[in-house]
Image (cartoon, rainbow, N blue to C red; front, top):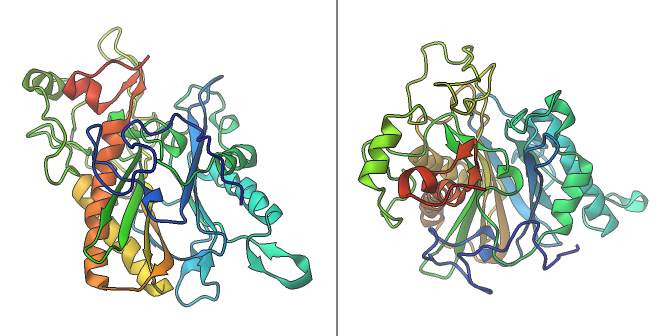
Length: 382
């Protein structure tokens, strides 16, 4: 497995080199790579009508026990049946999170080939190995302006680049990787991370790609729902009032929102296009929760399901019929199983924090500002 010290995006400014789990001044802190043996790589493209990317999570070379829970009504996934505890394969070698809707699933082909070239995968005798690479997509088609949108989607090349850029160091967050074209209600979505150290030393960590139909922001306070302990800066009262009066504030879905178009186009003269894509409302929040504890496939499924509890705390509404919300779980087995209930509770809290971190870190674009710009007075994206 090739692990480059060069991430696809700038290194995480909120995590000093070699940082383990913990929280920093620039966010809620921690990342998926706080679990030893896990590596993460990003790749993206934002030119010529593109606004999309790929995030790859690599297990240790020997693989990790894996599970998945798909709770949204419109998922785009790969190899999830294989993770059913009733089925044969026990170990996962990588997880691919990508933009491009169903077209983006092709990015996993590039990751598979890189792993196979490194001799990593399920052994199949003289035929070599078959890497086990499940994945999931978000819907970001057309957000860069390409026409047809299907010509600007991740494929094997971008997946391979994300693999090449994987590092076991701090993970870049925000408008990077699979979160490049993400939208959360009407704010810039993105990639977020968090981790928790349990009393016995076990690590639980999460990476979330937030592209939600629901809002991650409490309109009563302007705080992020997933900021469970109110650790992030408080919103500016004047900016909060302005946001609530704008068309980027959370708004109720129409009764038939599963089939109602939210039209794109000018809003109020020179206002930018509505970031909610025209046509059917389509979104999805996806991610990975990982631990160094020893778990079975069935217990990994429970870990992923608990992460969905955290997603439900951090996004409202969630798991709708236009969200393909899916969470994968990986257990490296470097430590004993410990207290499973404590692990599950930590997974929920950690994933909620990762969702909040994604919104907090997202810089967005001039036509799609982020949370910090609108509610905290941060700089407008260039």
